[in-house]
Structure formats: structure tokens, C-alpha cells
Image (cartoon, rainbow, N blue to C red; front, side, top):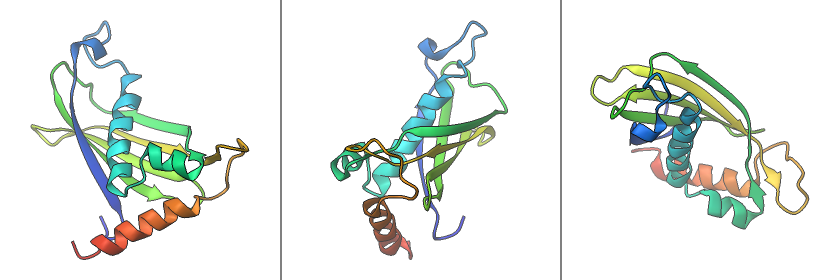
Length: 145
């Protein structure tokens, strides 16, 4: 991981209400878990959903890729790392789900979000200036640590 990369993580524990009839986490819940890690990443650069809205944008998910390697099981503790890999045209975030106890990778995923102007409802080709400024500020403040 290079010094220009921003990564954040969140830990979750798989709950009974997230299980499917096969007693593993239902596949659709992985998107919810990704959102938890994505929020941690956006909080890290001080650009959460309230900041987005204040700046006049929403960022809907326009594409998801998920590779299920191992199932998530009841009460399993999982760390989800979210890494910002692209932000020029869209917001692309890569995720790794890892078992807290063993460190084994469980799932790999990627989400793509596109900025949409709240007033015009038009998609933007490129990230809004406020997001780019927040990212650059974070990198400048954290390049040696």
C-alpha cells in the first residue's frame, strides 16, 4: 500500500438476523457491511454523507462486484477494509473482508459511485472540487504518518 492510498476499516460481528436458511450470512448483507466500511473511509477524510449533501451532491452506487470466497458465519468477527482506489471520474472503493481471528480473506469486493448534482439530478463526469480538496488535505496532513 503506498502513501497516496487511503484505507479505513470497520469491524462487525455477524448477527443471527443476517443469516439465510443455510446458516451463513445472506449474500445481500455484504453490501450493508461494505457500507459500514465505506462510511469509515469517508469519515476519515471528513467527507461523510452530510458533507456531500451540504456540498450539493449525492453519490449513488452505480456498480458492484463481489467475490465470495468463504461464507460469513454466525457470531464471526470480521474486519472490512475499504481502500479508495479511484476518484477522478467516479469514486471507486476496493474492499477486503477478513476474519479477525485468523486474518484469512473471506470476500473481495469493489463499488463504484458517481456524483449526482442534487439540484439538477445530473450525473457528473468527475469528482466535485470539495471532495478532491478533502482528499488532498487528508493526504497532505498524513503523508508522513
